[in-house]
Image 1: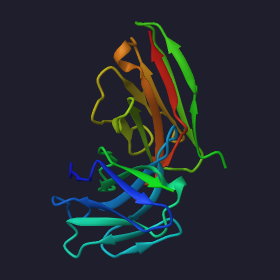
Image 2 (image 1 turned 60 degrees about the vertical axis):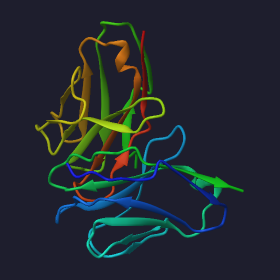
Image 3 (image 1 turned 180 degrees about the horizontal axis):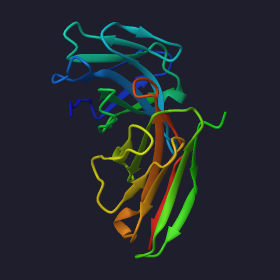
Length: 110
Length: 111
């Protein structure tokens, strides 16, 4: 299975943008890049996903490198409610095995 | 729209007892997953299913069995519970590509 590498933790100030990096140098052509986050004492929730092009939704933006070996999740204005563990996952779809790594714990300071 | 529902939400078992965790989804999703999460750790995939009647092993399948007799349900069984299986269990479902929806979790303690 393709692996991802994320920093263990990051800090941000409230109302500032946050860039969460993810390296996935062994990504295959059919792997989608997914991001999920898990708030304390809750189940994971979907944030965003993409294949090749940058993606935007109401929660975040996903910037994918041209060679697809890395990606960045962008939270445009961090709030205290964004403090969570963020997981970058490669998902090949037909393989079915949605595997989580260790993720990045994001702390947001007021 | 209930989404993904896990039953029960909490359970305490004695070592050696058996139990079944039920995951039900009402979104007609093909793919379903069972994970466990130990304190301070990430989620680890136990078993998954890519359709009714199919199951496959994930990262940590030992000590667990699963069944997907109906498309909407995915059952996780512990035949002989051990203290090492104390964990929070999450179920999820999706269409294969795209957003996966997670249940609220089952907190299992084995004493």
